[in-house]
Structure formats: C-alpha cells, structure tokens
Length: 400
Image (tube, rainbow, N blue to C red; front, side, top):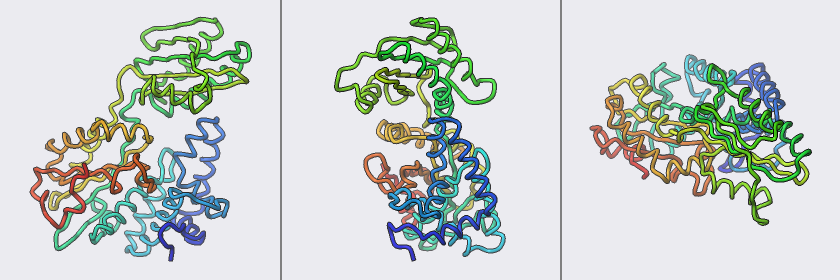
C-alpha cells in the first residue's frame, strides 16, 4: 500500500493507463509533444496544462526520480481512479472510463476527473460515506454524501478563468512565440532596453471572428520596422519607450517584480533578451477582469440541472487557468466570496446548501499563503433549510 507522501509504484500507474486505454494514452502524449513543439512559450503552457499526463508518464518510465508534493498528488489521485473503478458496478466502470477518455480528447484535460476524485477523498476524510452516484446510477450529480443518517448531493464542475478575461492567456503566449523572432532581430540592430505597452480595448482571443492575433502581430512589426514610437486606433494602442530601470532591477527576477508592481496583477508581461538588449511587452485589456463573475455565471447555469431537489446540494467548483497571484487576489479582495454569496441569493441556488471553490493549487496539495486553508473555499447558504444541520457541517461550513 502507498503511504502518505509516497508516490504510487509504476505498476499502479500502468494500471491507470490500461484503464484509459493504451491507444488513447499514446494519442494524448503525441498531442502534447506536438503542442510543446509549437514554440517556447506555447510549449511551456502545454506542459503546465497537461502536467498530470506528463507526470504519470515520467513516473511510469522512472525518469522522475524525486517528485515534489504536487507530482506525488497527481500520481496518487490517478492511482485512486483505478481503485475507484474496481469498486463500481459494470455500468459504473464504463461511465468512469468514458469520463477519463473524454479528458484525453482535444481541448480537454484530466483535471475535472482529478477534481472529482479528490473531492470524494476529502469528504471521506471529513467522515462522510461517499457513493459515486453519477457513475453508478447516471445521476445528474456526482457524489452522494451521507453522515449520521443525513444525505446530500454533490456536483463537481469546472470553469475557466479565461471566461472572465478579454485578454486570453492562451492567445498571449501564441503572440509571444510569433513575435519573438522579430524582437530578436530588432534588438540585434537596436541594442538597448525597451518597453512596448499594449492597450487592447477589445481584448485578444483565440479563434472565431474576434481572433485579432495576426493583425496585432503585423502592427507590432510595422511599428518596429518604421522606427515609430506609437500607433493607435479603436482596436489597440501601442507605445514604445525606453525601459528605465535601476541597476538592481536589471536582472530578470528584479525586472519582473518591478514590472508587476507597476502594471498590476492583471497585466500580461513578457521579456525577450538578446545579448545585452532587453525588450519588455506589457499588455492589458480595456476593462478589468471579471473572473469571479464568470464563476458565478457558471454556477447559475449548472445548479438547476445538476441536482434532483430531493436533498441538499453542494456545488464544488474547480477554477482552471488561474495562477497563484490571481487566485490569491480573488480571495484577499473578497471578489470570489462576494460573487459566490450573490449566487446563493439567486433563484437558481434555491436547492444549494453550499458552494466550494478550488484551483490547481489546492488540488495538488500545495501549502502556503496561496492555498485556501483546509483545502478549499466554502460558502454556506444561510437561507437553505439544511444550512445548520449538524451532520452536514463538515462539508458546508463557510471557511471565510
């Protein structure tokens, strides 16, 4: 048996790959390799997005000799999927396998499944009996919790922080990989330190009619080739200035922290260096991010269809595509709490006794000030009849 903090042995992870299917697993690894090859920053983003698959494969191949706490958590939860699969009925096993395979499809990840398995484990630790009702019975909710004769339905769902941004991070890294060769060439001809500030009133997204990446790339190239200082219209405002830094700020760590203080947590920042030349890009959308608002909208959309209405409902949200700085800001500025409590006053939340929110930081077991105490944020609905039921308290008591 695997002890706490000890990663599962490779055979347990081999069993996970057998569960999802060797072909599906191989296709996913090949897709990750292709994404990594697209460019330096896109490759780094792909590795972060698919950290679970990469970690499992490295452990299977024994090429990860000293996994950290997050990597051990990824592998342990994956091995837990195999144990869960063995406890289910035939129909339940098929539904679980289908969910895992769906997570390996293009555009998806295994994170929603890890969120579900980790949530089940967390509730067991709190003294609840947990049944995978979604797998076993095809219920609209995922888990049936019971404690001291009281039952509650728990539904796991995911929302991307990108839904609350006009300037998408995925589009930003694509732009950086496209523009980097141009910046390298320009710095070779213009040694020095420069700052290009981009204000994008309409934001920047990938795909569809609003994909303005190619046009923005061309505008930056034109600005540099024409030795111009500024360019602006209703779609973008570009301004190129010397980068003024004190000596202690010249190194990368000092530079990034200084830029973050100047431009704020919502700014998209990037540094390109060539010899002694440094080129900084700093971009912002035309309006502030509304990540917490996007979470509320998602909860309002799914709550009416995920519960039966016969038991108290707990909505467990996983917030994807956020980072430490943003996650901490959402908590400390009470933006997430404010939107969650507003949601609980809506008619759509009538059957919801509590909502919880986690990010990758909590899922991977990271400690420190960036993680929510107790492993999740929880907001209880004081208007729900079961809000003060003692048996449900460990799952519904507000953490803030």
